[in-house]
Image (cartoon, rainbow, N blue to C red):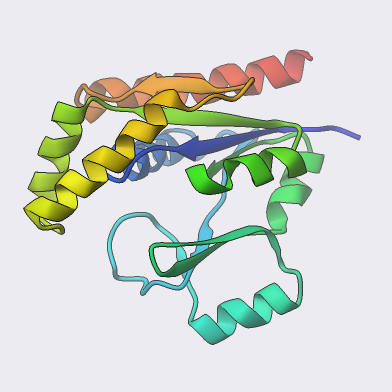
Length: 190
């Protein structure tokens, strides 16, 4: 049976994960070997940020009760899930890109030997600027997020890939796409 690669993208809030994933999804739309999974989230569809499938708390609970999630977690008052479709895609030998959670990384790694975390790494200064520009948090909340983001710097995993994201998207978007393609090529050659 073929086995694909699961690229589990993580990074601090404001690190640019959503922008990078959106850019790579557009660039790789015609690549038959790469697929981007949508997360199922108990957040309104028009909340901004990532392209996700919005579910009510009741809908999420019903899907969870029916074992329709390959992975799921709770963070910042919301429920997040990745559907069982990712298992089918991995079995077909595809490279599957997902927006993950640092807190769930250990459990996800236990479930998926083909998982490679991709840490979107950003400096404290750039992260502060991005959080201020998006205007969603107070100054105190931004400082709290910056302190929490420091925990990403000590993250360890045997398959960890790091992508610096301090430059403009016009530079880092192609670098992220190249990283995905490099893992796709490596999996095909294995």
